[in-house]
Length: 186
Image (cartoon, rainbow, N blue to C red; front, side):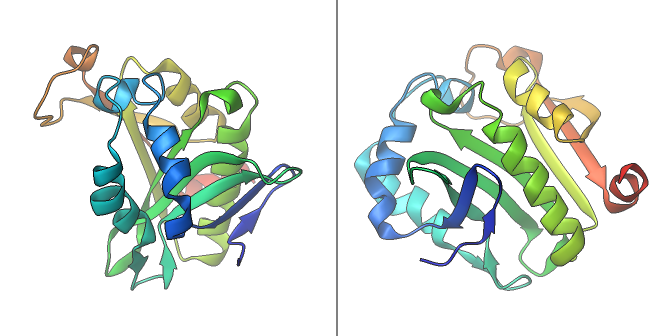
């Protein structure tokens, strides 16, 4: 299977339909889904009909997918996924960064390691000029990853979520980083 990106400890590769069980386990963990939907597990039908097709989508403007299965390089263990997806299928310059990792991999720096590598690849190889990321304001772990990855707090906003979940009353936060800002630091 082709590799999209490797770091010291991670391999990011395209998803396949064979990843269904991995996704079901990941999205079946209430703690993983806490800041996504309040902790509700995703059903097999939803993984097959909605989640997997989204992860398998190739973006015409980059010729790549926007979601990457993350595996531990040393063992091949599935850890979760990273998102580095153009916000507009016709424009590769602005991308959204995201990540969803299983609990066993939390607190080990994988999210930051993968995010930093994707940001670097975007700015050096993919024509990215701006990276954006968002999460619930109360999701301090995800916010810390964004900050450690070099993204800068931009704003707090309230989204149009159809169902309120605990913490949503505090809104969402957006972080971003431009290529110019990244170049000045590096």
